[in-house]
Amino acid sequence: MRIIIFGPPGAGKGTQAKMVAEHLGIIHLSTGKMFRDAINQGTELGKLVQSIIDEGQLVPDQTVVDMVEETIASEDYSKGYILDGFPRTVEQAVAFDNMLERRNESIDVFISLHAPDEVLIQRLLSRGEGRSDDTEEKIKTRLEVYKKETAPVMEYYQQAGMFRSVDGTGTVDEIFQRILSALPKK
Image (cartoon, rainbow, N blue to C red; front, side, top):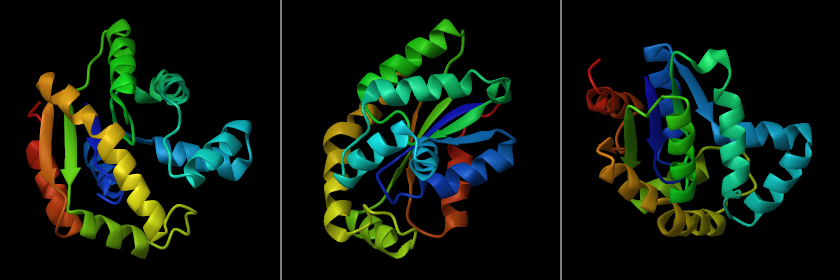
């Protein structure tokens, strides 16, 4: 099964993606983790990404698309995966769908987690990861960037008929059960 988990910063994408991946026996691919690994390793990509993140902006589309395409080409991903943090723009979604079409594959479901801004801000301030963009001011900037640049991706997948909206408030287990209920039955 190929799944996209989507939502604003602090919606719980990473936590839920990990749980869903374990439950289904597929790989959890987090572009955020891929970027953090590059930053921690001090690679050129990592330095570029760090400067972009420090400004509360998104990494350029082609950089992300190329990185994801290279990763999922691995045999490890042939049984399925859950994407967390990708695609973030309609351009990335179109490029991703084109790539999947060339591979004779498609996404099975697009899960969108939603929660009020106040809940998202509180979660991000309390998560304790020590990220340079986890200040209230930068979180608000990230939420605005999400609404302006990323939220239109939902419309793209709604039109494709694979969109499922899931309430991202409540306990981790409550949200997980809602996601499992939204998955297509195979």
